[in-house]
Amino acid sequence: MSHMITNPATLAPLGEVPESGTEAIGHAVAAARAAVGPWRNTPAARRAALLKEIANRIGALAGELAELSTRESGMARCESLDCVHAAAAAFDVLSRNPALDDGAGVTALLLPFDLALPVMGSGIARALAAGQSVICKPPAQNPLTCLALARAFDGLPDGMVSVVTGGPAVGSALSAHPAVAAIMFTGSSSAGLEVATTARGKRLDLEVGTIDAQIVCRDADLDLTVPAVAWARLVHGGQGCLSGGHIYVERSLAREFVDRLHQCVGFLDVDDPAKPSTDLGPLISLDAARKLEDQVGRTLRAGAKLILGGRRFRPSGLPGHFFQPTILTDVPAGSVPMREQLLGPVITVTPVADLAEALRRCVSPSVVSIYTADAEAAGRAVQAMAEGFFRINDPPVGDMGPFSGLRHPGIRHALGVPSAPDGPRDDSSRRKHVEMSRTIERKAWWFPYVDRALPP
Image (tube, rainbow, N blue to C red):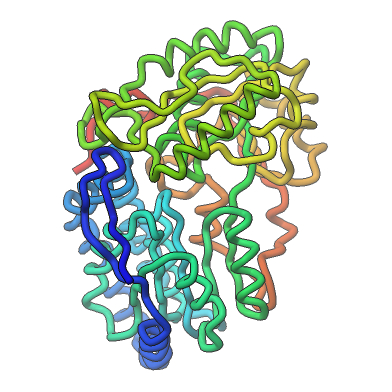
């Protein structure tokens, strides 16, 4: 059995990948087990040199990988390049300190369709640095770029990194395999729960989606807040784990905020992502587009107001899975955007009385970005929250670039602290974290992408 992979913008076929069966998975696990001992006995300087070599190999493949990622995933080309460079950066950083840990064994890495390359790079780099071998399962929707990235591992000993392709059954088989010691997973909450159930007793590192939020206070600088909110919510077409979730706006500012947001989002370029000027490409699949259209419909039936967009369409006559940039305002409490992730270019807005009400309404735990002229007051307000990751006037990612993973908890965990060996991570010191800037700074990677100088 095989899966046909198509371009989500043009529906042109790109290639086929097999559904890995029990035999293929068994061979991968056996090779991975055999490779661990020799790898851990390799001198640290040699392991560091190999990790640095992988970083260089990925860098050399950057143009080819970005082009394939754009055709396969629908990401704008500059976003694809960011993903490739983030994957290379993970190996570069960990090559400086490839310290072994006590969790030696075979690790299964189960990738999401969004930001697959950064998560693949960071997960494999971390495992190799810790002395673990890796079996990677790319997302079923867009595995070709991950397979192409795997060429960068050709210099490693046999069995250290292998890739198996297929759908959820392949991930379940890896999670349940008795010789797999650890699971790294990034994806939906429901899929994460299935992995945790299947992999009971293994070392788990699960990064699952939450209903994140952005809060716009009445004193926010809208010249900077509006483009910040728009980019944070719509990066990768609103489908990624970096997407900024639901928007709460203090009521006195809500009308002006929505008007400015309409002007900003309404002029974004939705087209074939292979074009350098494209801001938003297609959704990953027809099922994803249908689900999003249903979610928008249910939100409107609950009483929300449609300001822009709201349905599938065909920009430039393209037959792919495109969805109009959409703004919904006056979204009622407890409706769809507060319960479900909307994976697509849909911005949902709820007016609130003040910051305190917005914080009460946020789903916990989640990532909350707050935009305000009084950062100290916002900092005092979030201290009353039991848990969550709070950014005050702080962009969704760090200074290394939009997908560096240094500021977003989901990707940070893939690079950082593993969970306890007997279950999912439960690190109380990470239950609440606050990052604060006094003012918002415009970032070079915000929309419109036509203004971006693409990295080499």
